[in-house]
Image (cartoon, rainbow, N blue to C red; front, side, top):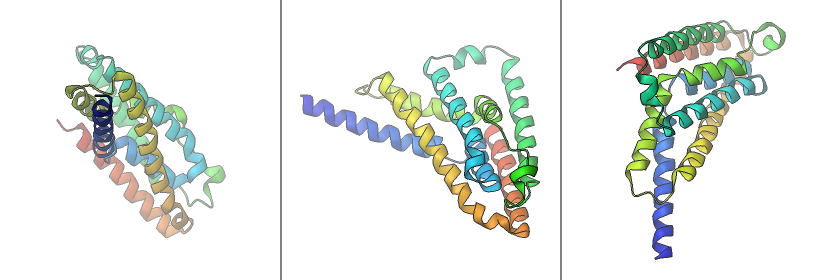
Length: 204
């Protein structure tokens, strides 16, 4: 019996990790912004912003797990306010990315996105609530051999891993960004992609 329960737990754990990787790890405002920041500013200057996104997304996870999404949805003025705040910051972020100078020059000149900016974007990111809600609800619908605390720990670890991977992916482009022309092209592409993924995430 214990072996059967253990096997069921491992199967649910694997299913949870795979669902989180596909749904939560797909391109969206937070993940694309982390990649774009990593490409435009390099690894070390991007860590504060990325930490803010990770913490904000973890807050969203806790809100979803506590069932507070329904309470928030019952406040008519809150959702539009969060959407407008998120869109305004994302447009600002896209502008900063598009106009960032080559890495060799931006040590002192570029205004780097901050921890607080990452936290605000993550908390106001509509895709995060939908994606995390879908994964958490899917896991809850199964026979619960993992338990809520385990699911929360696994999903929190996936949030860290997903954003770390997207950040590292962005820094792969950093070596190209010391060339002014390549820097301008790549930053413009990332800025446009950030705006596009945000627009798609906001669609009903």
